[in-house]
Image 1 (cartoon, rainbow, N blue to C red):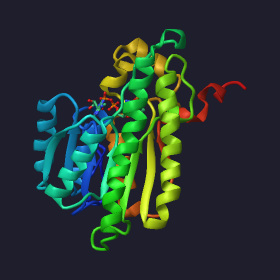
Image 2: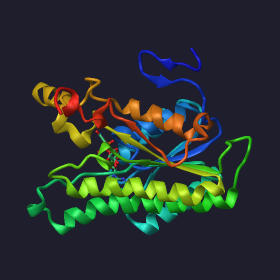
Image 3: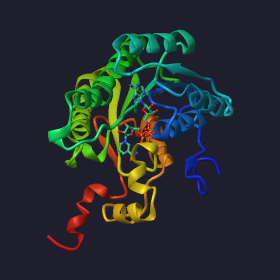
Image 4: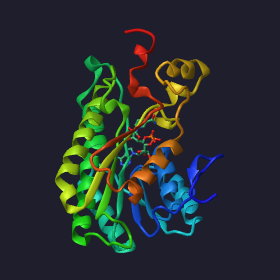
Length: 279
Ligand code: NAD
């Protein structure tokens, strides 16, 4: 039924983003993949960014093209300034403009702090935080050049930063990752404050535990999954579509008045579940 979430797949069937142009970084795996597909299903043309795994990226492109919209794959490392500049320039050339930037690419390099190398610290900050800055900056230049096109969207452009519950929950053994996501929260809010007067909406989506390759150890055995449930009041591990649907609606004019907000999509993980029975 048009306009409702499809019960079996938990996906949106409405074309909320018809005619818009979206770029998703890290879109050949996990949350980015599901988001790129959901944006295409919602009517957007989509650039599928990847850094390794061209075959997977081409499969995502084919899936998106199946919705009757345009898509292509683009290899770029989001932490490389020249590559990000070239990626957005090509998109403007091929699609005419950009309306939605989903800065999703991210990784972990975990270690107790005493064993964490500077290289592991730097890699995570470069990809998870600097990568989002570079992607946002290039998108903003095009948003400001083009301005609002009423028939397409009420806003001059949307940036969605993929954050994490670790934007607010400290995480032992992951100081590089938690610091990068804490940084993403302030990057998002500061950009939102600076760009709202120009009609640009900047927001973040903060996933809890989502079933993707990044955290396979946390859910891939029944024991690990049972342990994880202690942290999830809603008692299920999230699916990539849970995040993808949030991105689609947040990017759409349905939520046009939402500016500078982090939407936690986490089954209640940020509700301090340890206090449910104590405190
Ligand atoms: P994933 O490993 O499946 O996907 C990460 C993607 O980022 C991959 O496509 C990878 O190739 C890409 N990537 C890595 N380095 C890159 C670079 N330098 N340039 C371009 N792309 C690069 O993991 P995921 O779970 O889908 O993670 C996506 C985002 O969601 C990340 O920002 C992650 O921090 C965030 N997140 C995930 C969870 C979760 O539970 N899965 C929870 C909170 C936040």
